[in-house]
Image (cartoon, rainbow, N blue to C red):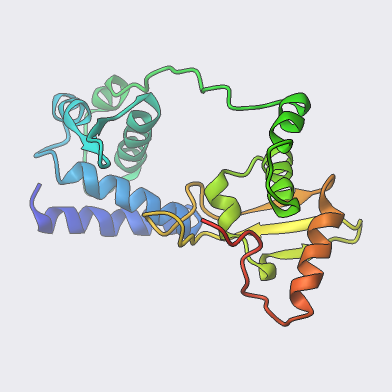
Amino acid sequence: MNTEVILVILKETQSLCKKAGLAESTIRKKLRTLNRILKGINKFSVQEIENWLDSYRYGRENKPLGPHGRNNYISAIKWYLCRSKMVKIDQGILASLKKEPFKPKDRSFDEEALEHVLQFSPSTLHELAFRLIRECGFRPHELLSITVSDISETREGWALIELPDTNPETSSGRNKTGSRSIICVRNAQRLLNLVKKYRETRNDKKRIFPWS
C-alpha cells in the first residue's frame, strides 16, 4: 500500500484504540504491527496477507514468523478490519484469517531446580534476582529495567513492583509486555531492605540489578 493510505489507516486505528480505552503501550504496539504488514501488501485479501506472513523475516538471523508471531499480526489486522468505518470488507475474509494453534513452551522451573541454580550464583544480589524471576515470572531483561522508584511497600508489608514500559536493555527500548504491576510476597523483605539501602543515598533512579 502507498504511504498516504497507510497513514490514513493508522490514524483511524489510533482513534479506534483510544475509543476502546486501550493503554498507550498497547496502542503503540498495535500501530507498529499494522504499519509493518500494510507496507507489505497491496490490498486486504486473504492471499496477500498470508503470502506476507509466509515471506516476512525478522531479526539478525532473518527468522520466519512462528505461530505466536503470526497470530499477533492476524489479531491486529482483524481487530482493525472489524471496527473500521473506512474499509469495508467481506466478513468471509475475516473468517478465513485463522490463527495457528500452538502449545506454549513450558519454561517453568520448580523449587528444586531453583536451589540447584542458586548454588552457582556469584552474589546475594544474583540470588535475589533468581528468586524474583521464580516468584514473579519476570523475564531477565524486565528485571534489569527496574529502578528503586519502581518499588514500594504495601500495607501488608509486601513489595509492589511497577514494571516500567521502557527498558534501555532491549533493542526496542521497551519491555516486551509493556508496563504492569507485580506483587512480591516471599522475597518482599529482602527486596524492600535493598530499596531502603539505596534510598538512604537518595538514588531513586538507580537500577536494582545494574548488570547487563
